[in-house]
Image (cartoon, rainbow, N blue to C red):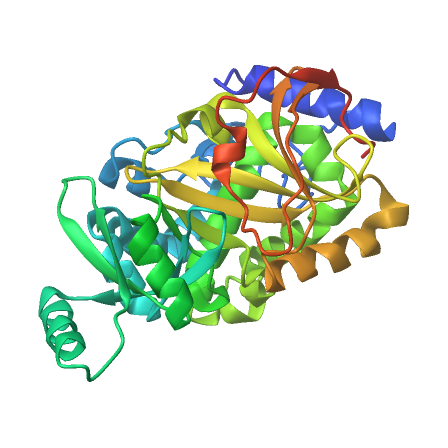
Amino acid sequence: MPYHPHDNFVIRYHAGLMRATGMDLPKWFLCPITLEDTLGQGQLASKGLLAAGHVIPESVVEAVPGAPAETVPQREDVDNHFGSTIERDLIDNVVSFNRDPRRHVRRLGRGAATGPDGQVFKVFPVGRKDIRKERAAVEEGRCRPSFVLTLGDQEGKPHHFRVTGDAELVERLHNEGKLEYKWSLRTPSAFHPAVTGAWVRCAYLALFKIMPAWVVMNPAMSFVREPLARFFRDRATSARAGGYFTEFDGALQIIQEGPHNLRPLDSVRHDTFLIHSWGRPFPDGFVFAVSVILPMRIGGILVTLPFCGGPAVKEQALRLYRDLLRDRSLPHQVQAIHVDGTRWNVHPTTACEPHEPFSLETFLGSPGVRPSEPPAA
């Protein structure tokens, strides 16, 4: 193959495949989505080259300052198909969130906020006029007061959300002060299937950049790879995305950054991801999922994908993964992992309690790391 900027990556990727499986060295390029050893079809393939595919679509990178611009080798025809279909839906989704988080909540009709002691509250967007009407009604004794959370966007413009709960809870919130400057959307129906599929592909490519052979050969990753491959082979369009990506309802979370910095956990730039395990912390617990963090201009996107320690435990891992997508408060262990070559540096953390949502604060400023080997592929 002629020289290409990703030649060293491809050599490392193919060598990892040989070590993990004993397979012969691929002749061209083992596509991480189709698992075909070919350069595909297109102008670059005729020259013996691969495309430099963006982990985050280039259109998003150009529209949203701060989005990671890193690339990985891709077949030109595969990359172009996703770029001309579901990734077009992604740009509208990202830009609307980064401009005005309230507009994004309004589209869903509801969101969620994290309280002072880790509790989760439903929130609804409200306007100043609604707030004035409620205050007048409270003064007249016609209704009980609600708690209004005010958040600022990147430009400092305030947006108001009403927090729902029982009267005792609302009264306590008024007495203790406002909620943390942080909110996230965890509604399974928060994203159109085309947007979900686009983000799932971004997360898969981010993991492929971090540990290419591990991701391609991990048995649970077939749950991700196969619908992406079918979407390409069927030459499907965004309108048909629901037939491929509905299994990932609940896999995406929008993270509102607040006072904390997501940059240290940037999966694309810093080779970092979160690992979910059952029972005990990694590496002793049962690994069933990984989460990729993709920072944007405001906060970021968290995408959770299945992962397992081997073929024998694939189905059990997928069952736990589906349980987590249905209920994000599922009690389990979550840890931040930084990959350094073949070493996984694990930041120790605590289990999520049944009432407690996943919280990024746990991983920021963690005291120290300890090295560990990755689970078997």
